[in-house]
Length: 508
Image (cartoon, rainbow, N blue to C red; front, side, top):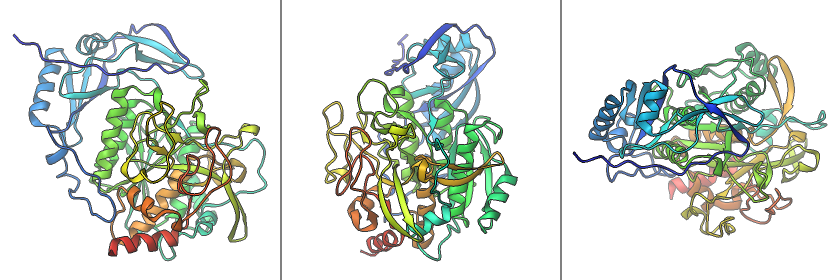
């Protein structure tokens, strides 16, 4: 009898991960098997001004899992004593449940107890799982926390801070728009929001509170009371909601694992109930801290979003060009480094009244208050739309995707007034820039009457005319200068100019 071919992937153990011993529990574990697309099927991003070719629901008939592949993986699961708990061929996922022993036997791993420096214990694997040929990843065997929220608290009370409406005015967000008819999806890997806090916050700004809905992913819940994670959730909702109060805010709560992160993005992209036209992500981790299978699975979820006309804005990180790594080399953050992500970097903004006085690269590492992420990917090739952006070589010496694409105020010393867990405070970080751009895109979608989708090519074609070009400062390894740079990308937005330029492309 012929054995079916199996394959393994590159496996990375993050810095500071310690093995504590074998996993001795017997409680069943639920995993997500991500299947390959139908043979030869590769979705094309819906790039402005093109509308998505396929709608949610019918997309999977062309780019979902092949029914034969689903059947084969079901047979694999049955053979190894695993139970199917859910499936969605449109999203290319099968949910399987089994005892640790059965999962170890099925995927050729040994589960252990691990710990990351400064974090709790978790179940993990010392090497990559062996996958059936129809699968590109099995997520959930390794339950390490894969991402951090990218917000920063100021060390001392800042003398300058902004409300979201003030920043919308400074960045010239298009008049007579509020995101009506749009849904902004927000991915959260922990924490929660308080409806009473949101009501107090928006009331204090004189804004009618937007509709906010919590969506559970893999059992994740809106659970306020988690400290820093709550700050991230409230910052995201308050930024997006105050800048696009007419939009619905759908918050997808998942666990901070590769399984939770993938399922949250995939579920949001394919959500036929809330139908987000833009997704904001303020979480991430250094590109090389991900296993190749996890990163590949995430990339297919982001690709699905782009093909469905959903723009995904992602924080570029708050630890400068090192992205928090200690090897002395530059690194970029993922999923910001995905070519399907609109990567959002950070600036320091000085304003007087309704006018910007100066804007430079956010770099407060001297006072331990962070700096914008940015650099060149070692995992993703230089995209066609960055061919003329003068992206420097990657640390490996090859051409790579440059990060970020765009930017906005992120310095905690010039941060944003938010309310979290009943406490008014000022928060910065590129976590604030992803929902800022998500709100702007929701308002542009509203005015243009169609989703921007994968807007990269349009933005790079438009160039500096619709941006405030940031030419001063650095994030460690990279220096700002005229045009695109690996600190602030194309720059911070001039919303009205951007609307006009996109409308011109639509009509051309």
